[in-house]
Structure formats: structure tokens, C-alpha cells
Amino acid sequence: ELRGQVAVITGSTSGIGLAFARALAARGADVVLNGLGDPAEIERARAEIESGYGINARYHNADMRRGDEIADLVAFARHELGRLDILVNNAGIQHVEAVDKFPTDKWENIIAINLSAAFYAIRAAVPVMKAQGRGRIVNLASVHGLVASPYKSAYVAAKHGIIGLTKTVALEVAEHGVTCNAICPGYVWTPIVEKQLNDQMRTRGMGRDDVIKKVMLAAQPTRRFVTTDELSGMLAYLVSDAGASANGQAFVIDGGWTAA
Ligand code: NAD
Image (cartoon, rainbow, N blue to C red; front, side, top):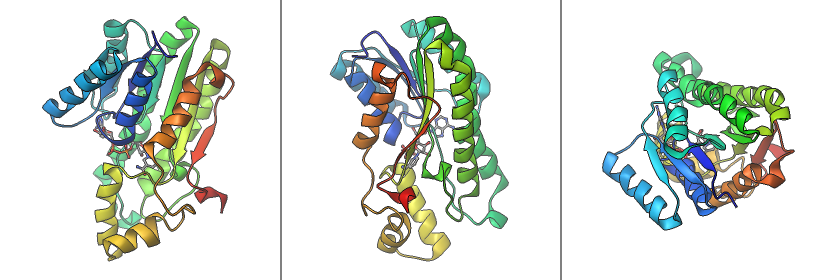
């Protein structure tokens, strides 16, 4: 149903972004992958997606801390694949530490990668989408775009920020067949969470099982991690024709976390 459409997914060498690239490719879209990692592994994933789904898959190594490289990524999608229909701003990092000890370089990087990168990508993509008369922008926020947890000042600030950006862009593009929405997952088991588990164990002086049960999944009433398939279902809806009137919203998939 997405045959002939082109999607850029930032941070798609791992976790949710990689699952999203597969989900869009499975529906027929050509995809541009992006993210960090071992070049040979990235090339394997790219080739597997391309042949597995019978679509064109490309890779661009833009560093999400660099606005010029992000603009390049968007231009690359157009030059390589001819269009840009779907932009998923997914790249993200985390650091868990008390605000008074929070390293300033971590703050700067989290704001750059989790918030400013989406601005740079949207800034480059909107003129293309407006000219096409159609486009879908999906930003990965988090439940931490709506509520806070201690020790995550930069992440919570960036995720609240991206919901504000989502709403503003939605208003600006609404009349052009373009939508801009955010997805707000609860805890999803991916490498970012695995790394955070170690930070949480250190910051809180707790063991692995205790952090999982008493910290991570304490607020998630399902008491299990959200799956990437569950998120891909929402993405598929938002980028579909049926999603045309869903605009400027933050769609929460958190096992009931923010219902409490
Ligand atoms: P992940 O660590 O598995 O993936 C992050 C991706 O971002 C990787 O591909 C990585 O290479 C890329 N990336 C990081 N820094 C980059 C940089 N400077 N330049 C380019 N790419 C860079 O994490 P994930 O869990 O898949 O997270 C994806 C998104 O979902 C993030 O925005 C995250 O905040 C959000 N999210 C995750 C969860 C969760 O529980 N996993 C919950 C809510 C929101």
C-alpha cells in the first residue's frame, strides 16, 4: 500500500527505527536507513531489507548532531529515490543522572539528537512534501514527552519539546496534505533500554531484576515491555491514507502508564 513512496527513518540501524524501516519496507516503501554502527552490519541489514521486501533501500550516515548532515540526508533521499513521502524522526539517546551531576556534554547531545535533529530534518523535508501535496512526519517522543521520571532531565526536556514541535509543524502543514504526529511509547526492550538498565543499577544501587520490575515496569500496568510490532501498527496507520486527519497529536502506547 506504500509502493512508490519513499521513507527516511533516522536512527534505523537498531531497535525501534530498524523495526520501523522493516515495517515500511514490508508495506512496499523504499527506505533510507540512517544511524551509527558497524558498517558491515549496517550493509547486511540494508541488503536484507532490500532483497527481503523487494524495495530499494539506501543508507546515509548523517550524524544527528549535525544540521548540515541532516539536510544532506533529506536531499539524498530525493536524489537517490526521487521523492520523500515519509519522515520518521526516531534517532535518540538517553543519559540517566541527577540534574546537579548531569554532564553538560550529555545535555547538549541529548537536546541535539532527540530534539534539534527533528527540527533540521523537518525543515528540509517540509518544502518537498508541500510541493508533492502529500507527506507524513512521525516523531518518536515518549511517555517522557508527557510525564517525567527522576534523573532524566535532558531526555524529558527534549521529549516534551518534540511534542511542541510536532503540534507547531502540524498547524503549518495541515492545508498541504501533510501531517505531523508523535508516537509516545512506554518502555520498549531495545539497546537504549539495555544500556539504561546499567545506568539505573548504578544510579539507584539496585540489581538488574529490581530495576526492571520496580523502576522500569513499575509504572507500566501491563508489567511487560511494549513491542516494536505494537508501535509499527501505529506507524502504519499514521502514514496511511486513513491517517490523513490525524494531525498534531501525541499517540501514547504505554501499556496504561499515563492512565494512572
Ligand atoms: P536504540 O538505541 O536501539 O536506537 C537508537 C538509534 O539512534 C540507533 O540507530 C543509533 O545508531 C541512532 N543514533 C544515536 N545517536 C545518533 C547520532 N548521533 N546520529 C545518528 N544516529 C544516531 O534506541 P530505541 O529504543 O530504538 O529508540 C528509538 C527512539 O525511540 C528514540 O528516540 C527513543 O528515545 C524512543 N523511545 C524509546 C523507548 C524505549 O523504551 N526503547 C521508549 C520511548 C521512546
